[in-house]
Every structure is written in C-alpha cells, then in structure tokens.
Image 1 (tube, rainbow, N blue to C red):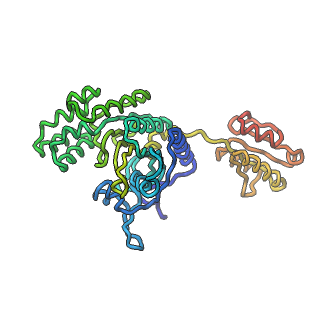
Image 2: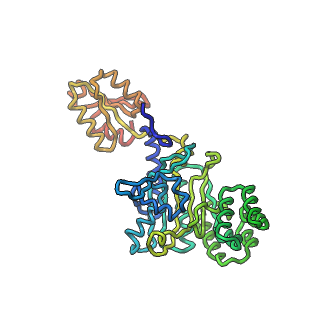
Image 3: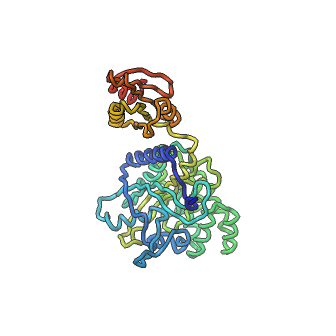
Length: 410
C-alpha cells in the first residue's frame, strides 16, 4: 500500500468542513480591515528566500533544479513572495496597500504536533505606510482574525529599538548571537552567549527588558532613545482600540529583516510549540529590486490554530437525502434540483437500493433531512419531509418542503 509522504496529511470531508469554516472566518475578518486577497506561485526562485532569510534557509526548503537548470524552491513562507509580487506588479499602486493571503507552504523539517512539511499560512501585509497607526493596525487585524476563529490566545508586543540600543556596542555577529538566544527564550543560553562575548554586564538589562511591565520600565533601562516617541504612539494606538496585549520587549524575532515593532501570538493549549502568529515592521522590497518600502505584517500558522481549536467541531450544514424508487425517479430528480437551487446539498441513491436501505444509509451518513417520495406522493405532487434529528415527518408540497428546510422550521 502506498502511503502519503511524511509530514503531510489527508483531510476527509468533516475535517475539511472545519478548515473551510475557519478559513472563511479569517478571510471575512481580513476583508473587514480593507485587505484584498493575493495569490503567488507555489514555487519561486531559491534566491528570493535566501535574500530574505540567509543561506541557512536552503537546508529547510524543498529546493531543486528544474529542466531549464533554474534553482527553484517550493515556498517555505509567504511574506517574501508577496513582497516580490508587489515589486513586480504594484509599486506604482496607491499607498498603503493592504494585502492578505492564504496558501500552502513547504518546509523540510521534523514533523510534530501542529508542525508539518506541508502546511498552510494565513497572513496580512500593509505595504507603504511608515507610521505608528500602521503598526497598530497590523496588531489589531491579527487580534481580530485570531479572535474570529475561537482559538484561545495571547498577543505579546514589543519593539526592537530598545534591545538594539543595548547591543549597539557589539558587532553584527555578536548581536545575532545574543538575539538568537533571546529568540529561544532561554536565560541560560543568553548568559552563555554574553559570557562568550565577554559582555555579562548586559545580562541584567536584557532580562529587565524581557520582564518590563510598562513602557516606563523599558525607558528606565535604555534612557531616552530616538525611537521613544514612535514606540509610545504605537502602544497608544493599540490601547485606544482596546486590544488586550502583553508587553514584551524581549521579542527578538529570529529573522534579520525586522526593523521596529514586533509581535507574537500564542495559543494556550499547544504545549511548548504554542506560537501561532508572528509579525512586525520590516523592509524587504529593496532586496528584490524595488524601492525601499516600509511594510508591516504578520503570518498565522493555520494548522496550529486548527489543532488548538480541534475540539470545537463545526455545526453540520443542512443537507437532504432524496429517497425514492426507480418508478418515481423523475420526481426525485425534480426534488433534488429544487433543494440544490436553494443552496441545500441533496443526494440521491446511486445503487438501486430499497426504500428502507436508502433511509438507513441516510441516517448513517448524518444528513439532516430525508425527502421521501413514493408512488402515492408522486401521484399527488407532494413529498414527505422527515427531520432525521427530531424523528418528525409531514407530507407537503415540494416548495413547502424546500421552505421548511431553508428556514429550519421543520
């Protein structure tokens, strides 16, 4: 028996119904903030992702050479392709641009709960707005989208300027080592990294940033840094929208391209691998041949959200099984068409089974209603509508039966 590739999944109808329901909630919420959907190719030139994330990303990608000897990779994330699309197609468009996406991505890594080699990412990008209001808008959209799914979560928001201020005396390699330790949220690793750099004096100030409860706590550590006004305005905009966040100026974000405000989201029931959202302020367009453009956005791990709320199965949609014998098949076709025209899924028997066998199959399949049509109903121009959940049935006209199901009165 041929098995599915490691790190991939098959989704059967009930699970797909749940995933589509989540997806539509997220799409609707993103649209309410003025974001329009974009779609980019499933594969891109490898260089796109190397420019964004460094050579290390090559080991995490499904990368190959195509028949034209071009170095191609299945996309491991969607921010870089979206900004590449902006550079190619929309640099002259009015700013700010609000785009969202929902697509599958691929990473060659060890599969674990909520983390797969084929996965789906939902995200939003605000392109061309360098302001505190834009930064806060990204946080607001992320909060609203996650809230729409029903997942239980917290959002932590920080800014890179205070951390970079403390690390300004270190060279680029030293800063990267320290920020890598901070990104792993491991005080022991941080202490070791600073000892290696002979800068153990930075341990207490950095831990102070991580544990700061207010902006005043942050600026007591850093002093009056140039970015202070922007930071204060950003958090004021977030507070004005009554978005519940947790202050965390220890967020380092593992990617080098973030430049200002950063934020992360965590589900409360996924254990150690509980991050479901990450984002912040960044600049990428100039790396891809475009003009230097301020951006702010985020990505949501759709699969982790789905795992987190897995116990909340969607309510099964209304559906109908049309049960009839061969002698009245024309009436059955007419009934099925009438329900489908009103958006109600309707199925008919394809195996020439008996009336009772069809009814038994309908009950087992979980449809909401059975529409029974025998010779008596066909002659009278009626149907018998049976509510399979309430075990109630009544004879009525086809139009009345459709009305009853659509409006849920039977």
